[in-house]
Image (cartoon, rainbow, N blue to C red; front, side, top):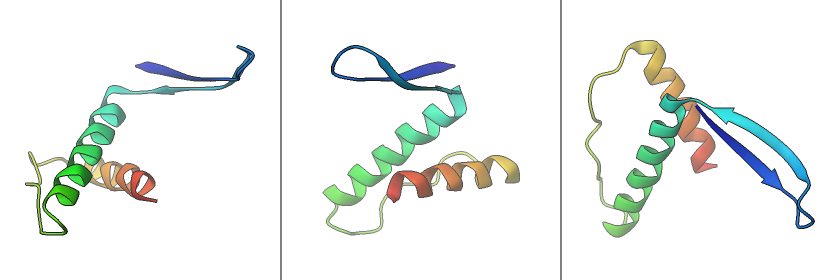
Length: 69
């Protein structure tokens, strides 16, 4: 788990969330995928990775859609 804290300019805590390892992994892979696509100038890129269970794939897609928006 990772705790992400948004701190105001004066040092006060504005908000905090806890992010699990799976979400961090998906976020990083999503960012890496976006960078590969940009570098390839809109060409199809990125292998899908290892096969995940259905629930994990759905969760992954939900997280990636948030990154892209």
